[in-house]
Amino acid sequence: QAHLDAITALDPKLHAFITVTAEQALAQADAADAALAKGEAGPLTGLPVAIKDVFCTKGVKTTAASKILEPFVPPYESTVTSNMLHDGAVFLGKVNLDEFAMGSATTNSAFGATINPWQRQGSDVALVPGGSSGGSAAAVAAGMALAATGTDTGGSIRQPASYCGIVGIKPTYGRCSRYGVVAFASSLDQPGPFARTVEDTAILLGSMAGHDPKDSTSVPRAVPDFAAAAKRGVKGLKIGVPREYRAEGMPAEIEALWAQGLDWLRQQGAEIVDVSLPHTKYGLATYYIVAPAEASSNLARYDGVRYGLRVPANDLKDLYEGTRAAGFGREVRRRILMGTYVLSAGYYDAYYLKAQKVRALILKDFTDVFSKVDALLTPTAPSAAFAIGENADDPVQMYLNDIFTVPASMAGVPGMSVPAGLDAQGLPLGLQVLGRHFDEETVFAVGAALE
Ligand code: GLN
Image 1: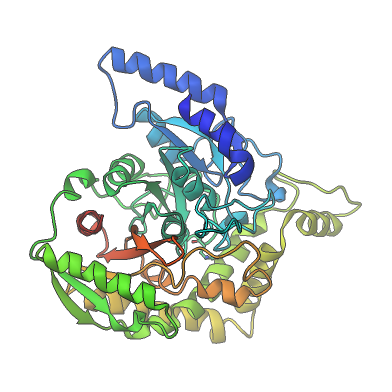
Image 2: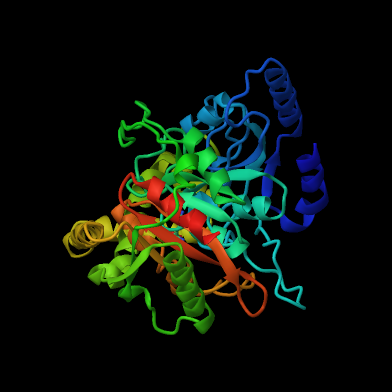
Protein backbone atom coordinates (compact mmCIF):
# COMPACT_ATOMS: atom_id res chain seq x y z
CA GLN A 1 0.00 0.00 0.00
CA ALA A 2 2.87 2.36 0.80
CA HIS A 3 4.27 1.87 -2.69
CA LEU A 4 0.84 2.33 -4.30
CA ASP A 5 0.50 5.57 -2.31
CA ALA A 6 3.90 6.70 -3.57
CA ILE A 7 2.77 5.98 -7.13
CA THR A 8 -0.40 8.05 -6.60
CA ALA A 9 1.64 10.91 -5.17
CA LEU A 10 4.61 10.95 -7.56
CA ASP A 11 3.67 9.31 -10.81
CA PRO A 12 1.49 12.10 -12.22
CA LYS A 13 4.75 14.09 -12.43
CA LEU A 14 7.26 11.31 -13.25
CA HIS A 15 5.10 9.16 -15.49
CA ALA A 16 7.01 5.95 -14.92
CA PHE A 17 3.93 3.70 -15.05
CA ILE A 18 1.87 2.78 -18.10
CA THR A 19 -0.44 0.48 -16.10
CA VAL A 20 -0.86 0.27 -12.32
CA THR A 21 -2.32 -3.05 -11.17
CA ALA A 22 -3.33 -1.91 -7.68
CA GLU A 23 -6.05 -4.47 -7.03
CA GLN A 24 -3.91 -7.37 -8.18
CA ALA A 25 -0.96 -6.06 -6.13
CA LEU A 26 -3.02 -5.91 -2.93
CA ALA A 27 -4.34 -9.43 -3.54
CA GLN A 28 -0.78 -10.69 -4.10
CA ALA A 29 0.29 -8.88 -0.91
CA ASP A 30 -2.49 -10.64 1.03
CA ALA A 31 -1.32 -13.96 -0.39
CA ALA A 32 2.21 -13.05 0.70
CA ASP A 33 1.00 -12.33 4.24
CA ALA A 34 -0.71 -15.72 4.33
CA ALA A 35 2.45 -17.44 3.05
CA LEU A 36 4.55 -15.69 5.69
CA ALA A 37 2.12 -16.67 8.43
CA LYS A 38 2.41 -20.30 7.34
CA GLY A 39 6.21 -20.07 7.21
CA GLU A 40 6.15 -20.66 3.46
CA ALA A 41 7.92 -17.54 2.26
CA GLY A 42 9.92 -17.60 -0.98
CA PRO A 43 12.90 -15.37 -1.76
CA LEU A 44 10.69 -12.52 -3.05
CA THR A 45 7.59 -12.98 -0.87
CA GLY A 46 5.75 -9.68 -0.49
CA LEU A 47 8.36 -7.59 -2.30
CA PRO A 48 6.71 -4.92 -4.49
CA VAL A 49 8.30 -4.70 -7.93
CA ALA A 50 7.57 -2.91 -11.21
CA ILE A 51 7.72 -4.73 -14.54
CA LYS A 52 9.04 -3.19 -17.75
CA ASP A 53 6.11 -3.19 -20.16
CA VAL A 54 7.94 -5.48 -22.54
CA PHE A 55 7.37 -8.62 -20.42
CA CYS A 56 4.13 -10.41 -21.24
CA THR A 57 1.96 -10.58 -18.15
CA LYS A 58 -1.06 -12.85 -18.24
CA GLY A 59 -4.29 -10.84 -18.26
CA VAL A 60 -2.48 -7.50 -17.95
CA LYS A 61 -2.13 -5.19 -20.96
CA THR A 62 1.36 -5.27 -22.47
CA THR A 63 2.31 -2.43 -24.83
CA ALA A 64 6.10 -2.33 -25.42
CA ALA A 65 5.27 1.43 -25.34
CA SER A 66 3.93 1.10 -28.89
CA LYS A 67 0.56 1.90 -30.35
CA ILE A 68 0.86 -1.09 -32.63
CA LEU A 69 0.26 -3.60 -29.83
CA GLU A 70 -2.88 -1.93 -28.53
CA PRO A 71 -5.01 -3.53 -27.17
CA PHE A 72 -2.84 -6.61 -26.53
CA VAL A 73 -3.55 -8.55 -23.34
CA PRO A 74 -1.24 -11.58 -23.27
CA PRO A 75 -2.86 -14.95 -22.57
CA TYR A 76 0.40 -16.14 -20.97
CA GLU A 77 3.15 -15.04 -18.59
CA SER A 78 6.82 -14.53 -19.55
CA THR A 79 9.19 -17.00 -17.93
CA VAL A 80 11.06 -14.31 -15.98
CA THR A 81 7.91 -12.79 -14.44
CA SER A 82 6.49 -16.26 -13.87
CA ASN A 83 9.66 -17.20 -11.91
CA MET A 84 9.26 -14.06 -9.81
CA LEU A 85 5.58 -14.70 -9.09
CA HIS A 86 6.45 -18.23 -8.10
CA ASP A 87 8.96 -16.79 -5.61
CA GLY A 88 6.27 -14.57 -4.06
CA ALA A 89 6.79 -11.16 -5.73
CA VAL A 90 4.04 -8.53 -5.75
CA PHE A 91 3.62 -6.76 -9.11
CA LEU A 92 2.73 -3.06 -8.87
CA GLY A 93 2.25 -2.59 -12.59
CA LYS A 94 3.91 -2.13 -15.97
CA VAL A 95 6.46 0.63 -16.51
CA ASN A 96 7.40 2.87 -19.41
CA LEU A 97 10.18 2.39 -21.95
CA ASP A 98 11.28 3.55 -25.37
CA GLU A 99 9.00 1.98 -27.97
CA PHE A 100 10.17 -1.62 -28.46
CA ALA A 101 13.15 -0.74 -26.21
CA MET A 102 14.71 1.38 -28.97
CA GLY A 103 16.29 4.43 -27.38
CA SER A 104 18.45 5.87 -24.64
CA ALA A 105 16.11 8.35 -22.96
CA THR A 106 12.56 6.88 -22.71
CA THR A 107 11.45 9.77 -24.92
CA ASN A 108 10.47 7.39 -27.73
CA SER A 109 7.44 5.99 -25.86
CA ALA A 110 4.07 6.26 -27.59
CA PHE A 111 2.67 7.12 -24.14
CA GLY A 112 4.91 10.12 -23.39
CA ALA A 113 8.28 10.52 -21.69
CA THR A 114 9.24 9.43 -18.18
CA ILE A 115 10.91 12.09 -16.02
CA ASN A 116 14.02 11.38 -13.93
CA PRO A 117 13.30 11.92 -10.20
CA TRP A 118 16.72 13.61 -9.92
CA GLN A 119 17.18 17.30 -10.77
CA ARG A 120 20.22 19.50 -11.22
CA GLN A 121 20.96 21.55 -8.12
CA GLY A 122 18.96 24.77 -8.15
CA SER A 123 17.15 23.87 -11.38
CA ASP A 124 13.82 22.30 -12.16
CA VAL A 125 14.62 21.41 -15.77
CA ALA A 126 13.11 17.96 -16.43
CA LEU A 127 15.82 15.36 -17.11
CA VAL A 128 15.58 12.01 -18.89
CA PRO A 129 15.87 8.83 -16.79
CA GLY A 130 17.92 7.17 -19.53
CA GLY A 131 16.57 4.36 -21.64
CA SER A 132 15.18 2.22 -22.76
CA SER A 133 14.22 0.92 -19.27
CA GLY A 134 13.65 4.49 -18.00
CA GLY A 135 10.33 3.73 -16.31
CA SER A 136 11.92 0.89 -14.34
CA ALA A 137 14.85 3.03 -13.17
CA ALA A 138 12.71 6.08 -12.31
CA ALA A 139 10.18 3.95 -10.37
CA VAL A 140 12.93 2.44 -8.21
CA ALA A 141 14.86 5.72 -7.75
CA ALA A 142 11.70 7.55 -6.65
CA GLY A 143 10.68 4.85 -4.16
CA MET A 144 7.57 3.88 -6.14
CA ALA A 145 8.87 0.29 -6.33
CA LEU A 146 11.45 -1.63 -4.33
CA ALA A 147 12.91 -3.12 -7.48
CA ALA A 148 12.09 -3.52 -11.16
CA THR A 149 12.75 -5.68 -14.16
CA GLY A 150 14.37 -4.32 -17.29
CA THR A 151 15.85 -5.56 -20.53
CA ASP A 152 19.24 -4.63 -21.96
CA THR A 153 20.04 -4.93 -25.66
CA GLY A 154 22.79 -2.32 -25.90
CA GLY A 155 22.76 -0.71 -22.45
CA SER A 156 19.10 -0.31 -21.55
CA ILE A 157 19.55 -1.52 -17.97
CA ARG A 158 23.00 -0.12 -17.24
CA GLN A 159 22.60 3.42 -18.62
CA PRO A 160 19.24 4.22 -16.90
CA ALA A 161 20.65 2.77 -13.66
CA SER A 162 23.56 5.22 -14.00
CA TYR A 163 21.28 8.21 -14.76
CA CYS A 164 18.95 7.42 -11.83
CA GLY A 165 21.57 6.58 -9.19
CA ILE A 166 20.62 2.93 -8.70
CA VAL A 167 22.07 -0.52 -9.43
CA GLY A 168 21.25 -2.47 -12.59
CA ILE A 169 22.75 -5.63 -14.06
CA LYS A 170 22.58 -7.10 -17.55
CA PRO A 171 23.36 -10.78 -17.01
CA THR A 172 25.25 -12.95 -19.50
CA TYR A 173 23.27 -13.50 -22.70
CA GLY A 174 21.40 -16.75 -22.09
CA ARG A 175 21.21 -16.45 -18.28
CA CYS A 176 17.56 -15.31 -18.25
CA SER A 177 14.89 -16.63 -20.56
CA ARG A 178 13.58 -14.32 -23.29
CA TYR A 179 10.35 -16.31 -23.54
CA GLY A 180 7.46 -13.87 -23.37
CA VAL A 181 9.68 -10.79 -23.71
CA VAL A 182 8.69 -8.66 -26.70
CA ALA A 183 11.66 -9.07 -29.06
CA PHE A 184 13.86 -6.21 -30.26
CA ALA A 185 17.20 -7.78 -31.31
CA SER A 186 17.11 -11.43 -30.36
CA SER A 187 20.86 -12.10 -30.30
CA LEU A 188 21.36 -9.22 -27.83
CA ASP A 189 18.18 -8.89 -25.70
CA GLN A 190 18.62 -9.94 -22.09
CA PRO A 191 16.37 -9.37 -19.05
CA GLY A 192 17.84 -8.20 -15.74
CA PRO A 193 16.98 -6.45 -12.46
CA PHE A 194 17.15 -2.90 -11.02
CA ALA A 195 17.29 -2.17 -7.28
CA ARG A 196 18.84 0.29 -4.85
CA THR A 197 21.61 -2.05 -3.65
CA VAL A 198 23.86 -4.65 -5.26
CA GLU A 199 22.59 -7.30 -2.85
CA ASP A 200 18.98 -6.60 -3.82
CA THR A 201 19.79 -7.04 -7.52
CA ALA A 202 21.56 -10.29 -6.65
CA ILE A 203 18.45 -11.63 -4.90
CA LEU A 204 16.24 -10.55 -7.81
CA LEU A 205 18.48 -12.09 -10.46
CA GLY A 206 18.58 -15.35 -8.51
CA SER A 207 14.82 -15.53 -9.00
CA MET A 208 14.67 -14.29 -12.62
CA ALA A 209 17.46 -16.50 -14.01
CA GLY A 210 17.53 -20.15 -15.01
CA HIS A 211 17.32 -22.47 -17.96
CA ASP A 212 14.05 -22.45 -19.87
CA PRO A 213 13.30 -25.06 -22.55
CA LYS A 214 10.97 -22.49 -24.16
CA ASP A 215 13.97 -20.29 -25.12
CA SER A 216 16.54 -22.17 -27.17
CA THR A 217 19.20 -19.55 -26.35
CA SER A 218 18.74 -19.87 -22.60
CA VAL A 219 21.64 -21.84 -21.16
CA PRO A 220 21.27 -24.96 -18.99
CA ARG A 221 23.47 -23.87 -16.10
CA ALA A 222 22.77 -23.88 -12.39
CA VAL A 223 21.96 -20.47 -10.92
CA PRO A 224 24.60 -19.68 -8.27
CA ASP A 225 23.93 -17.88 -4.99
CA PHE A 226 24.51 -14.35 -6.30
CA ALA A 227 23.80 -12.70 -2.94
CA ALA A 228 26.56 -14.76 -1.30
CA ALA A 229 28.90 -13.82 -4.15
CA ALA A 230 28.22 -10.13 -3.48
CA LYS A 231 29.85 -10.59 -0.06
CA ARG A 232 33.05 -12.20 -1.34
CA GLY A 233 35.17 -9.06 -1.53
CA VAL A 234 37.75 -8.27 -4.19
CA LYS A 235 40.98 -9.28 -2.48
CA GLY A 236 43.33 -10.85 -5.04
CA LEU A 237 41.12 -10.05 -8.03
CA LYS A 238 42.68 -8.54 -11.13
CA ILE A 239 40.66 -5.61 -12.46
CA GLY A 240 41.33 -4.44 -16.01
CA VAL A 241 41.13 -0.83 -17.19
CA PRO A 242 40.51 -0.83 -20.95
CA ARG A 243 42.46 2.07 -22.42
CA GLU A 244 40.06 2.46 -25.35
CA TYR A 245 37.34 3.60 -22.94
CA ARG A 246 39.18 6.87 -22.30
CA ALA A 247 36.89 8.48 -24.84
CA GLU A 248 37.88 11.81 -26.27
CA GLY A 249 35.99 14.67 -24.67
CA MET A 250 34.93 12.60 -21.67
CA PRO A 251 34.01 14.99 -18.83
CA ALA A 252 36.81 15.33 -16.25
CA GLU A 253 34.35 14.42 -13.49
CA ILE A 254 33.75 11.02 -15.04
CA GLU A 255 37.51 10.43 -15.42
CA ALA A 256 37.95 11.38 -11.76
CA LEU A 257 35.19 9.08 -10.60
CA TRP A 258 36.66 6.21 -12.59
CA ALA A 259 40.05 6.76 -10.93
CA GLN A 260 38.31 6.94 -7.57
CA GLY A 261 36.55 3.62 -8.24
CA LEU A 262 39.86 1.97 -9.12
CA ASP A 263 41.35 3.36 -5.90
CA TRP A 264 38.54 1.88 -3.81
CA LEU A 265 39.14 -1.53 -5.39
CA ARG A 266 42.92 -1.25 -4.88
CA GLN A 267 42.41 -0.35 -1.23
CA GLN A 268 40.32 -3.50 -0.79
CA GLY A 269 43.07 -5.71 -2.18
CA ALA A 270 42.43 -5.83 -5.93
CA GLU A 271 45.20 -5.45 -8.46
CA ILE A 272 44.58 -2.88 -11.21
CA VAL A 273 45.87 -3.76 -14.68
CA ASP A 274 45.88 -1.71 -17.91
CA VAL A 275 44.34 -3.70 -20.76
CA SER A 276 43.29 -3.18 -24.35
CA LEU A 277 40.08 -4.01 -26.21
CA PRO A 278 41.29 -2.91 -29.64
CA HIS A 279 37.98 -3.27 -31.51
CA THR A 280 36.01 -1.08 -29.10
CA LYS A 281 35.88 1.73 -31.64
CA TYR A 282 33.75 -0.42 -33.95
CA GLY A 283 31.23 -1.30 -31.23
CA LEU A 284 28.65 1.38 -31.92
CA ALA A 285 28.80 1.09 -35.71
CA THR A 286 28.35 -2.68 -35.67
CA TYR A 287 25.64 -2.54 -33.00
CA TYR A 288 23.62 -0.06 -35.05
CA ILE A 289 23.75 -2.51 -37.97
CA VAL A 290 23.08 -5.78 -36.13
CA ALA A 291 20.34 -4.49 -33.78
CA PRO A 292 18.21 -2.78 -36.49
CA ALA A 293 18.69 -5.80 -38.81
CA GLU A 294 17.26 -8.14 -36.19
CA ALA A 295 14.58 -5.60 -35.28
CA SER A 296 13.40 -5.27 -38.88
CA SER A 297 12.93 -9.01 -38.96
CA ASN A 298 11.31 -9.31 -35.52
CA LEU A 299 8.90 -6.44 -36.17
CA ALA A 300 7.62 -7.94 -39.42
CA ARG A 301 5.03 -9.79 -37.34
CA TYR A 302 3.08 -6.57 -36.59
CA ASP A 303 0.96 -6.75 -39.69
CA GLY A 304 -2.48 -5.82 -38.38
CA VAL A 305 -3.64 -9.40 -38.78
CA ARG A 306 -2.46 -11.47 -35.85
CA TYR A 307 -2.84 -9.11 -32.91
CA GLY A 308 -2.79 -5.49 -31.83
CA LEU A 309 -3.74 -2.49 -33.92
CA ARG A 310 -5.56 -2.97 -37.24
CA VAL A 311 -6.29 -0.06 -39.55
CA PRO A 312 -9.15 -1.19 -41.80
CA ALA A 313 -8.33 -1.24 -45.51
CA ASN A 314 -9.64 -2.57 -48.79
CA ASP A 315 -6.74 -4.84 -49.63
CA LEU A 316 -3.87 -6.58 -47.88
CA LYS A 317 -1.14 -4.15 -48.92
CA ASP A 318 -3.12 -1.16 -47.66
CA LEU A 319 -3.85 -3.04 -44.44
CA TYR A 320 -0.11 -3.60 -43.82
CA GLU A 321 0.87 -0.08 -44.78
CA GLY A 322 -1.93 1.66 -42.95
CA THR A 323 -1.42 -0.36 -39.77
CA ARG A 324 2.37 -0.08 -39.69
CA ALA A 325 2.35 3.64 -40.54
CA ALA A 326 -0.16 4.37 -37.78
CA GLY A 327 1.27 1.96 -35.23
CA PHE A 328 5.04 2.54 -35.28
CA GLY A 329 6.73 5.70 -34.03
CA ARG A 330 9.53 7.58 -35.81
CA GLU A 331 12.51 5.83 -34.21
CA VAL A 332 11.03 2.37 -34.78
CA ARG A 333 10.40 3.19 -38.43
CA ARG A 334 13.97 4.49 -38.73
CA ARG A 335 15.31 1.19 -37.34
CA ILE A 336 13.12 -0.91 -39.64
CA LEU A 337 14.39 1.09 -42.64
CA MET A 338 18.04 0.79 -41.56
CA GLY A 339 17.66 -2.89 -40.79
CA THR A 340 15.93 -3.70 -44.06
CA TYR A 341 18.59 -1.78 -45.95
CA VAL A 342 21.58 -3.56 -44.38
CA LEU A 343 19.94 -6.94 -44.98
CA SER A 344 18.96 -6.27 -48.58
CA ALA A 345 20.50 -8.09 -51.53
CA GLY A 346 23.51 -6.11 -52.69
CA TYR A 347 24.20 -4.54 -49.29
CA TYR A 348 24.11 -7.64 -47.08
CA ASP A 349 27.83 -8.45 -47.58
CA ALA A 350 28.95 -4.85 -47.18
CA TYR A 351 27.03 -4.15 -43.97
CA TYR A 352 25.39 -7.05 -42.16
CA LEU A 353 27.96 -9.73 -42.91
CA LYS A 354 30.83 -7.31 -42.21
CA ALA A 355 29.21 -6.30 -38.92
CA GLN A 356 28.93 -9.95 -37.90
CA LYS A 357 32.65 -10.44 -38.59
CA VAL A 358 33.55 -7.39 -36.51
CA ARG A 359 31.25 -8.67 -33.78
CA ALA A 360 33.36 -11.84 -33.65
CA LEU A 361 36.49 -9.68 -33.21
CA ILE A 362 34.85 -7.72 -30.38
CA LEU A 363 34.00 -11.00 -28.68
CA LYS A 364 37.60 -12.14 -29.14
CA ASP A 365 38.85 -8.92 -27.48
CA PHE A 366 36.87 -9.81 -24.37
CA THR A 367 37.91 -13.47 -24.39
CA ASP A 368 41.58 -12.42 -24.64
CA VAL A 369 41.31 -9.85 -21.88
CA PHE A 370 39.44 -12.19 -19.54
CA SER A 371 42.32 -14.66 -19.76
CA LYS A 372 44.36 -11.99 -17.95
CA VAL A 373 41.90 -10.22 -15.63
CA ASP A 374 38.81 -11.19 -13.62
CA ALA A 375 36.70 -8.11 -14.36
CA LEU A 376 36.82 -4.73 -16.06
CA LEU A 377 35.92 -1.31 -14.68
CA THR A 378 34.74 1.53 -16.95
CA PRO A 379 32.30 4.45 -16.75
CA THR A 380 28.72 3.39 -17.61
CA ALA A 381 27.92 6.38 -19.81
CA PRO A 382 29.80 9.40 -21.17
CA SER A 383 27.53 11.88 -19.35
CA ALA A 384 25.01 12.31 -16.55
CA ALA A 385 21.27 12.53 -17.30
CA PHE A 386 20.50 15.16 -19.93
CA ALA A 387 17.44 17.36 -20.36
CA ILE A 388 14.28 16.10 -22.06
CA GLY A 389 14.43 17.29 -25.65
CA GLU A 390 18.24 17.42 -25.75
CA ASN A 391 19.60 15.13 -28.52
CA ALA A 392 16.01 14.70 -29.70
CA ASP A 393 16.60 15.80 -33.30
CA ASP A 394 19.93 14.07 -33.69
CA PRO A 395 19.71 10.28 -33.63
CA VAL A 396 23.49 9.86 -33.99
CA GLN A 397 24.10 12.03 -30.91
CA MET A 398 21.60 9.84 -29.06
CA TYR A 399 23.34 6.64 -30.24
CA LEU A 400 26.71 7.94 -28.95
CA ASN A 401 25.35 7.58 -25.43
CA ASP A 402 25.72 3.82 -25.75
CA ILE A 403 29.44 3.91 -26.46
CA PHE A 404 30.53 2.17 -23.21
CA THR A 405 27.63 -0.30 -22.90
CA VAL A 406 27.35 -1.69 -26.44
CA PRO A 407 30.63 -3.70 -26.69
CA ALA A 408 29.65 -5.98 -23.77
CA SER A 409 26.26 -6.52 -25.41
CA MET A 410 27.93 -7.54 -28.67
CA ALA A 411 30.12 -9.98 -26.72
CA GLY A 412 27.27 -11.24 -24.51
CA VAL A 413 29.24 -10.75 -21.27
CA PRO A 414 27.56 -9.60 -18.03
CA GLY A 415 27.68 -5.93 -17.02
CA MET A 416 26.52 -3.96 -14.00
CA SER A 417 26.16 -0.26 -13.31
CA VAL A 418 26.79 0.83 -9.72
CA PRO A 419 26.18 4.39 -8.49
CA ALA A 420 29.60 5.79 -7.68
CA GLY A 421 29.17 9.50 -7.03
CA LEU A 422 27.60 12.78 -8.08
CA ASP A 423 28.67 15.33 -10.66
CA ALA A 424 29.09 19.06 -9.90
CA GLN A 425 25.38 19.61 -10.50
CA GLY A 426 24.44 16.89 -8.02
CA LEU A 427 23.46 14.25 -10.58
CA PRO A 428 24.37 10.57 -10.11
CA LEU A 429 27.07 8.88 -12.17
CA GLY A 430 27.58 5.13 -12.48
CA LEU A 431 30.58 2.90 -12.98
CA GLN A 432 30.30 -0.24 -15.09
CA VAL A 433 31.69 -3.62 -14.02
CA LEU A 434 32.08 -6.22 -16.78
CA GLY A 435 32.80 -9.90 -16.22
CA ARG A 436 33.39 -13.21 -17.98
CA HIS A 437 30.52 -15.13 -19.53
CA PHE A 438 28.42 -16.66 -16.73
CA ASP A 439 30.64 -15.14 -14.04
CA GLU A 440 28.07 -12.71 -12.64
CA GLU A 441 29.39 -13.74 -9.22
CA THR A 442 32.61 -11.74 -9.70
CA VAL A 443 30.59 -8.83 -11.11
CA PHE A 444 28.47 -8.82 -7.95
CA ALA A 445 31.59 -8.98 -5.74
CA VAL A 446 33.20 -6.03 -7.51
CA GLY A 447 29.94 -4.08 -7.62
CA ALA A 448 29.43 -4.52 -3.88
CA ALA A 449 32.98 -3.31 -3.24
CA LEU A 450 32.14 -0.04 -5.02
CA GLU A 451 29.00 0.70 -3.00
N1 GLN B 1 20.10 2.66 -26.65
C1 GLN B 1 20.25 1.45 -27.37
C2 GLN B 1 19.32 1.43 -28.56
O1 GLN B 1 18.64 2.37 -28.74
C3 GLN B 1 20.04 0.27 -26.47
C4 GLN B 1 18.63 -0.03 -26.23
C5 GLN B 1 18.44 -1.27 -25.40
O2 GLN B 1 19.37 -1.76 -24.78
N2 GLN B 1 17.23 -1.79 -25.44
O3 GLN B 1 19.28 0.49 -29.31
